[in-house]
Image (cartoon, rainbow, N blue to C red):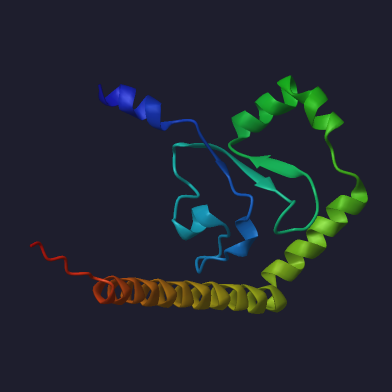
Length: 147
């Protein structure tokens, strides 16, 4: 039974499309690093896309050596038909240099600050709406009398 549970936990694939938006203290990047799950034995592969955070196109798959060997040997037509041109690789490298540098850190801090501000304003607005609705309900109460 324990062996079955282990088998069920293996083979997870994680898509980390916004990976570089997070730069965790231990040097890793992405949500997996933030959750300290980068080396988890259940992870079969990671998929990192370059369309959002890097502003380009394409993706990479990361994983153990045996997975990479399998892909090279059995997915060769897919690999070579979807390879990126040199200018895309340079664009991705420049984006990552910016994202991981001081400019990226400043922009991340600003985004996280704006998200916190938005959340607090939304919560405050919901509290006001709730208070207003309660007050409005209380002020529109009608008393009916029967004869």
